[in-house]
Image (tube, rainbow, N blue to C red):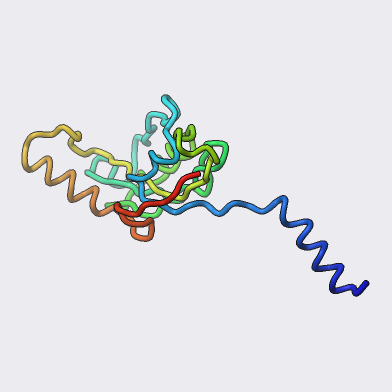
Amino acid sequence: MNRSLIGVILAVACSTPFAVEKPQVLPPERLENYWLLLSGSAKQANAPNAGRNLDAPSCAAVAYVVEKDGSTSHVELKRLVPDGDLGKVAVSVVQDMQFAPAPQNLGKTPVSTYVVIPFNLPGQNATQAADIELRKRTLDACKLDGFGAKDTVIQVR
């Protein structure tokens, strides 16, 4: 047999069973259609005692992949507003997160998404207009492009 034909056959035979499934890219609001955060897996943030902008209202956008086993990988700080020392804290929180597949995700489709972690912001239930505006403005600054639109419908196995 021709050596190049043998090489092609070996390459196909060796790569097929070990092919890595490419993660589905989706916005954070669609994650619950694929994966559900396990209770207790999102640890309390352990912020340093000293550093830059530790007390400033801020947010961190952290991109990650939820793998077939529900673990996170490829965890990367994409944006920190304002710049400071809370990025490592946000990455640490995401690295510890564990997920269970949503009922419609029987194939355990891996996904690539991101989370925005708020620091020093008024709570979601704030009632004063200034607090609501501060929270919205800060969190909007951490939204990332390239993760699909809210109305994107992706088929789940």
